[in-house]
Amino acid sequence: MTDIQDDFMPNPNKRLNKNMLEELSEETREAVLAEIKRQISENKILIYMKGAPNAPECGFSARAVQVLIACGKPFAYVNILTNPLIRSELPKYADWPTFPQLWVNGELVGGSDILQDMYETGELQKLLNEAVPEE
Image (cartoon, rainbow, N blue to C red; front, side):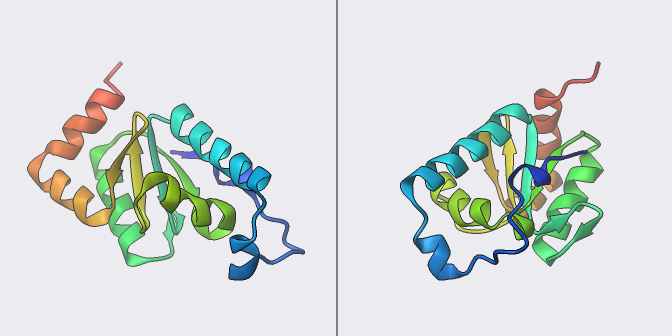
Protein backbone atom coordinates (compact mmCIF):
# COMPACT_ATOMS: atom_id res chain seq x y z
CA MET A 1 0.00 0.00 0.00
CA THR A 2 1.41 3.39 -0.96
CA ASP A 3 0.55 6.55 0.93
CA ILE A 4 0.44 9.60 -1.34
CA GLN A 5 -1.83 11.71 0.81
CA ASP A 6 0.84 14.23 1.81
CA ASP A 7 1.25 15.54 -1.73
CA PHE A 8 -1.40 18.20 -1.34
CA MET A 9 -1.57 18.84 2.39
CA PRO A 10 -3.46 21.97 3.38
CA ASN A 11 -1.86 24.63 5.52
CA PRO A 12 -3.08 23.80 9.04
CA ASN A 13 -3.07 27.51 9.90
CA LYS A 14 -5.59 28.27 7.17
CA ARG A 15 -8.82 26.28 7.36
CA LEU A 16 -10.73 26.09 4.09
CA ASN A 17 -14.45 26.62 4.21
CA LYS A 18 -17.05 26.04 1.52
CA ASN A 19 -17.00 29.67 0.34
CA MET A 20 -13.22 29.60 -0.05
CA LEU A 21 -13.43 26.39 -2.10
CA GLU A 22 -16.07 27.96 -4.37
CA GLU A 23 -13.79 30.96 -4.92
CA LEU A 24 -10.68 29.03 -6.01
CA SER A 25 -8.75 30.80 -8.71
CA GLU A 26 -8.54 29.18 -12.11
CA GLU A 27 -4.81 28.74 -11.53
CA THR A 28 -5.45 26.85 -8.27
CA ARG A 29 -8.12 24.68 -9.89
CA GLU A 30 -5.71 23.82 -12.71
CA ALA A 31 -2.98 22.94 -10.19
CA VAL A 32 -5.36 20.68 -8.26
CA LEU A 33 -6.52 19.04 -11.49
CA ALA A 34 -2.90 18.48 -12.53
CA GLU A 35 -2.21 16.85 -9.15
CA ILE A 36 -5.25 14.58 -9.48
CA LYS A 37 -4.18 13.54 -12.99
CA ARG A 38 -0.64 12.86 -11.74
CA GLN A 39 -1.88 10.72 -8.87
CA ILE A 40 -4.14 8.71 -11.15
CA SER A 41 -1.50 8.22 -13.85
CA GLU A 42 1.29 7.26 -11.44
CA ASN A 43 -0.69 4.63 -9.51
CA LYS A 44 -2.12 1.55 -11.18
CA ILE A 45 -4.58 1.08 -8.32
CA LEU A 46 -5.63 4.20 -6.42
CA ILE A 47 -8.45 4.83 -4.00
CA TYR A 48 -9.63 8.26 -2.92
CA MET A 49 -11.18 7.67 0.47
CA LYS A 50 -12.13 9.16 3.82
CA GLY A 51 -9.32 8.25 6.18
CA ALA A 52 -6.53 5.76 5.64
CA PRO A 53 -6.71 2.02 4.91
CA ASN A 54 -5.70 1.21 8.48
CA ALA A 55 -8.12 3.81 9.88
CA PRO A 56 -11.03 4.51 7.50
CA GLU A 57 -13.30 7.32 8.63
CA CYS A 58 -16.56 6.20 7.04
CA GLY A 59 -18.29 2.89 6.50
CA PHE A 60 -18.18 3.11 2.71
CA SER A 61 -14.43 3.69 2.70
CA ALA A 62 -13.96 0.86 5.22
CA ARG A 63 -15.91 -1.56 3.03
CA ALA A 64 -14.05 -0.53 -0.13
CA VAL A 65 -10.66 -0.95 1.55
CA GLN A 66 -11.63 -4.37 2.96
CA VAL A 67 -12.48 -5.54 -0.54
CA LEU A 68 -9.21 -4.18 -1.96
CA ILE A 69 -7.15 -5.79 0.78
CA ALA A 70 -8.96 -9.10 0.19
CA CYS A 71 -7.83 -8.94 -3.45
CA GLY A 72 -4.21 -8.89 -2.30
CA LYS A 73 -2.82 -6.28 -4.66
CA PRO A 74 -0.85 -3.22 -3.57
CA PHE A 75 -2.72 0.05 -3.89
CA ALA A 76 -2.21 3.74 -3.21
CA TYR A 77 -4.66 5.97 -1.43
CA VAL A 78 -5.45 9.62 -0.90
CA ASN A 79 -7.20 10.71 2.26
CA ILE A 80 -9.64 13.34 1.01
CA LEU A 81 -10.33 14.54 4.54
CA THR A 82 -6.81 15.96 4.74
CA ASN A 83 -6.91 17.15 1.12
CA PRO A 84 -9.91 19.49 0.84
CA LEU A 85 -8.90 20.83 -2.57
CA ILE A 86 -8.83 17.34 -4.04
CA ARG A 87 -12.07 16.49 -2.24
CA SER A 88 -13.65 19.53 -3.84
CA GLU A 89 -12.36 19.10 -7.39
CA LEU A 90 -12.21 15.31 -7.95
CA PRO A 91 -15.99 14.80 -8.21
CA LYS A 92 -16.09 17.36 -11.03
CA TYR A 93 -13.16 15.74 -12.84
CA ALA A 94 -14.52 12.22 -12.38
CA ASP A 95 -18.17 13.12 -12.93
CA TRP A 96 -18.76 10.97 -9.83
CA PRO A 97 -20.11 12.83 -6.79
CA THR A 98 -19.27 10.46 -3.94
CA PHE A 99 -16.35 8.85 -2.13
CA PRO A 100 -14.63 6.45 -2.07
CA GLN A 101 -13.52 6.34 -5.69
CA LEU A 102 -11.39 3.51 -7.04
CA TRP A 103 -9.24 4.19 -10.09
CA VAL A 104 -7.50 1.36 -11.95
CA ASN A 105 -5.10 2.03 -14.81
CA GLY A 106 -6.37 5.59 -15.09
CA GLU A 107 -10.05 4.64 -15.28
CA LEU A 108 -12.71 5.23 -12.64
CA VAL A 109 -14.15 1.91 -11.49
CA GLY A 110 -16.65 3.22 -8.94
CA GLY A 111 -17.49 3.38 -5.26
CA SER A 112 -17.96 0.86 -2.49
CA ASP A 113 -21.22 -0.71 -3.71
CA ILE A 114 -19.79 -1.30 -7.18
CA LEU A 115 -16.56 -2.68 -5.71
CA GLN A 116 -18.50 -5.06 -3.45
CA ASP A 117 -20.60 -6.31 -6.38
CA MET A 118 -17.52 -6.74 -8.58
CA TYR A 119 -15.70 -8.58 -5.79
CA GLU A 120 -18.60 -10.99 -5.30
CA THR A 121 -18.64 -11.87 -9.01
CA GLY A 122 -14.84 -12.10 -9.32
CA GLU A 123 -14.66 -9.14 -11.70
CA LEU A 124 -12.67 -6.97 -9.32
CA GLN A 125 -9.97 -9.58 -8.74
CA LYS A 126 -9.64 -10.06 -12.51
CA LEU A 127 -9.37 -6.30 -13.09
CA LEU A 128 -6.75 -5.84 -10.37
CA ASN A 129 -4.76 -8.90 -11.54
CA GLU A 130 -4.63 -7.39 -15.03
CA ALA A 131 -3.51 -4.05 -13.60
CA VAL A 132 -0.80 -5.60 -11.40
CA PRO A 133 0.13 -9.04 -12.77
CA GLU A 134 2.00 -11.58 -10.65
CA GLU A 135 5.76 -11.29 -11.09
